[in-house]
Every structure is written in C-alpha cells, then in structure tokens.
Length: 283
Image (cartoon, rainbow, N blue to C red):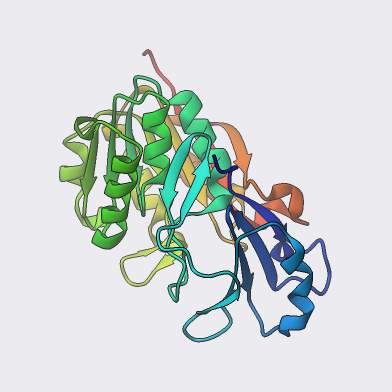
C-alpha cells in the first residue's frame, strides 16, 4: 500500500532564499521535481539518495515543459493516493499533472462535510473535489467544466474508486453561458467554486467571479455553504469577501482554509485561499 502524496519542498513559498524556483512532490513510488528556471543537474544529486523508484524533473521554465528522467523511468499508469482515494496522474509535457496537492485541505473538508448533501462543483477539472465529497457520503455531485478531456479523466477517477455512477454527473459546459442547465440539478447544499485565475476569454477572476456569486442565491437551499477558492498571488481573501458582500449578501463569511502548503509560505495569502460562506435563513 502506497503512502499518501504530499509536497516535500515548496521553494515558491519563499522561505528558502535562492531556491524559489524548486518544488518537490512525493507521489510514491515517484518523486517529481519541478523547476521554474534552469538548474544544473548536479545540484539536484542529493535527491538520488531518497527511496523512490523514479525521480522525474519537469522543466516548467521552457516554452513547452519537458520531462527528464533522473532515476528509474516514467510510470505507465501513475496514481496519487490521498485519504483512501486514488487519482490518475499524467507525467509528461503538459503543464499540469491532473491533480493539485495544494487543495488537500479542501478535499478533506468535503470528505468531512458533504454527507447526504447535493454538491455543485464548478470548474471541476479532473474532479478530485467531487470524489472527496462522494467518498464522504454526498447524495449527488454535479461536475461542470468546459474541458471535456479533464472531465473524462474525472469520470475515470470515479470509476477507479468504485463510485456509483448514479450519484455523479459530468457536464461539459461553458459555465458562464449555461446557468439554466446547471441549475436544473439543484437546488444545492454545497457549491464549490474553484476557477483558474485566467482561462483566456472564457473566464478571468477579476472580471467574472462576481457573475457566479450573483447566481448563488437562486441555486441553493437555505443553510447552503459555498466553498469559494482563489489562487492568485495578487488577490487576497478580502477580494472574495467584498464580492460576496456586494453581490450575495445572503451569504455570510464563516471560515477560511489555507493551502496545504501554508506552513511553507512566507505569506499564505499569496497561495490558495479557500473561504466558506453560509446562506442565512431557516433551513
């Protein structure tokens, strides 16, 4: 049985001057080193002593990231293990591997709070948050993302974890233009909003986040909770609090979770922020 995945070193957090360009992630039996600027291989030799079958180096500083095998090889069907769930990974030339370690605290919250709830998962990507909610006993999860390829990985993740297919939906929609279809499976008890900071013309956080927030009241039960995520070093938690106060005053801020890397960061507000807002009113 593999041990859980986790980040070993988070240079981007700024606590180790001179190594801000290095990130090291553990996906047993594979170690993934991500570099954001050119780094001599001999300076990474210390990692060869670690007990991993495979050590891979992703060169994110190149126009198209390259993957170098430092030890072992590229596993044919790599998986991330976390809290009893398994998630497919893709080690290669794509920028993302299909799974975000910084969202561990968010997945844990859903696993602990989604029992018998109807959950809407916006910007679902490969649906790790959906899987966590369903493992935690969610009645139904509706995943929405415009990327059909990512959703197909999400479907496979649910199949690998033996999730009842009747409890989950995968909708390949442009969220901003599909509210009627999205609302059809509601009203929801939990809404997860985890957008990319910039998705080209289709979504930009500063331009479009409030448009989602304005829709929440009509799509949710009294007592519903919104898990609103923000992953920009330039926008802080107050950005979301102000948007909710202005566009969805029915929802009151209740709590905040930081990225699972928060202890490795000089300023956790520059990393992933997860804020919770509860819809007030009689349940």
